[in-house]
Length: 206
Length: 269
Image 1: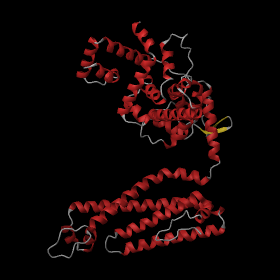
Image 2: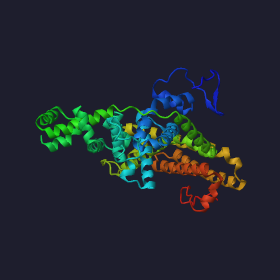
Image 3: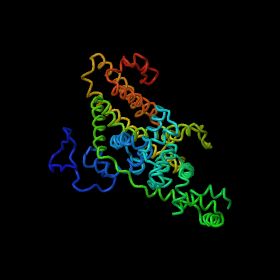
Image 4: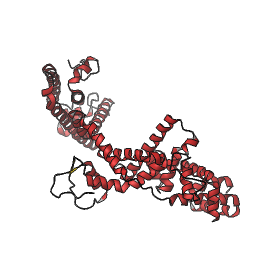
């Protein structure tokens, strides 16, 4: 990040003028960060990006697959920065960002499946490609098995088991009841156990 | 606890959501059932492995891609009309005003209906009439003895709500007028004259209602409601003028406008 001139009213980057940061130090809490992003301050936007980039990109990658993840993550962040002006703070910023990421990812998967009429075999190729036979690591097998789940199961499993969110948060993000979140996760885990059967048993013995 | 119960509860057990008794029974079953124990162990391995998955690092090019996306969106914004942008800016402020107006309308309706219900019969009085109007026309002491305290408090609240609604309606109208008038010089003369004439009609209608309300001895809730209806119609008209601008005449020509109260065609001719 480039250092900004202290007294400049605006800063210039690649020919585009942006408001200067009103705050010298780091942003205390989401409220300050959101306000600064709403004013279009570049430093705040970068801070928000760095704060959420791994979570958003990880979630998107695991739902849409690595080949399309960058495109969808770009769309998610554009929606975040454009949508912050309408963010009323009814939910936590993180929850709102997750919701945008899940919605964009599921919408993308739905569109893609319509265009390609993907079958299960094709869907399995969507996520990060892993050579299952030659790669013994369970984590990689898990990533691969995740790709074979229906998108809805993938979303709940990523949010709850990988991102570590509670069922209440998952329900708020996905827009369902807490009971539905629990039952979807139960089914998703059971399906994953089926897919990873021998690998899980081997790991358990080890 | 049976195997089938364990299969149903295994996910909740993993998340620590079972109460102590069920969790104890769950563990007890696992101690005696090899099949279920292996099944739940595999689930535990799955959950633990998922929790340990490494975060996915985005490529360095992602931030540049986001900046490009934002730049494209801003270019698209630049092609929007000034009025649309102005409208977006004031829209959030209109929402609280709309909520207050809706609350006031509900309050007025409730009071009107309440006034139409038969009240307690007075031994020496006329047939029951609307409580508020009756209280207002009676000597102060008598009104105070007739109207319970709770009604007086309610009427205070009603007065405040109505005053706020009036204020917010007029603030909204003023804001919209300023928006439209900033662009009015670019409108064709004929259309501008028609706009001003129609706005004059609204102003006159509202003024008539206000004068009638001021002259009324009683609390005229129906008159107040009619005044608010004029305000709402005027706001709808100004919103369309702000958004559609000179296109308003064409829209009306296709029969899409109905903004004037009192059965007028509402056309912006």
